[in-house]
Image (cartoon, rainbow, N blue to C red; front, side, top):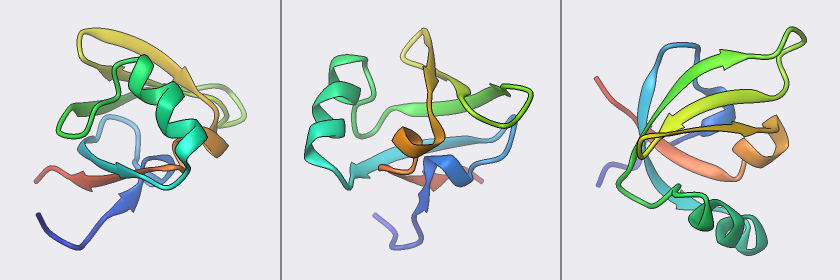
Length: 79
């Protein structure tokens, strides 16, 4: 595992990343229940007109996350 993590909220449209960890335990439980597991690849598929919320593809599902929620997910960007 590398140490150059970003917040999911910092990932650009069309980029993919691997979920590494979470910064908030309450949000972690919610995201785990939705299929956002460490090691899963997430792809940012769209943003709402004002940039919040964002839509991500993860584990054969499409999820909508507020930017404040996405900021609790640490990811490593895929090259």
